[in-house]
Amino acid sequence: GAVVSQHPSWVICKSGTSVKIECRSLDFQATTMFWYRQFPKQSLMLMATSNEGSKATYEQGVEKDKFLINHASLTLSTLTVTSAHPEDSSFYICSAIRSAGIVKRGANVLTFGAGSRLTVL
Amino acid sequence: QKEVEQNSGPLSVPEGAIASLNCTYSDRGSQSFFWYRQYSGKSPELIMFIYSNGDKEDGRFTAQLNKASQYVSLLIRDSQPSDSATYLCAVNMAGTYKYIFGTGTRLKVLA
Image (cartoon, rainbow over all chains, first blue to last red; front, side):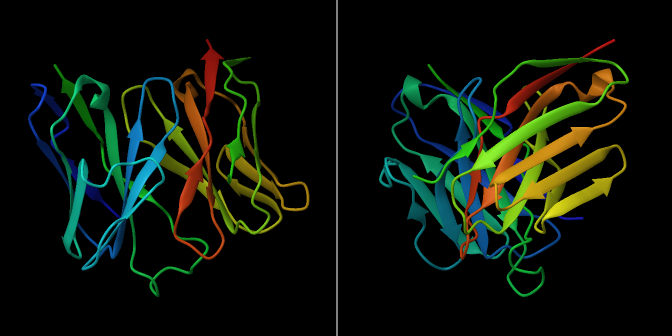
């Protein structure tokens, strides 16, 4: 089955520093990956759609200069939280779907990474 | 604003009972519907998906879809304490690979 690896699983950093989170599809090619953020007791909020070889598409209200997304290959997307602040502390989860044409459109299944818990002091 | 609505719960059921989880969505063009289970501190894991009207069964789980009413549900038969988790309903927006999640329903199965 589809496996998505996310690293690191947790990170603590000082305010003002930058943190990079990696998301890898291990056994399939993912032209599209998604980055979600989840605050305690809330649902997943889509931050951006990461497209291999092109710019990410950000959701309304998400600062693209603060949350840098790079999808340089078919198996790797990275999210960099720049100049992190305590309010950025959250659970960040990536997900991926298989390349179009392999799975019937309309029934593509999101596979999630294990998530990265970020704490900014 | 495309929305997916779920009752936040908690929904408490005794062990062995049937748990019924409900979800409504606003985008009539939605194509696929997913149920994910999320344990505290973990990422969501897929239980099942459905994209045709009617019922779809997988072991103790049954998903039900009614597109006319814009309603999807998940039934868990013979509920076990290990089923205690938050259940997220997700909807695939028509014509996109974008998925919108509900806020989740917290299920407690009492031993």
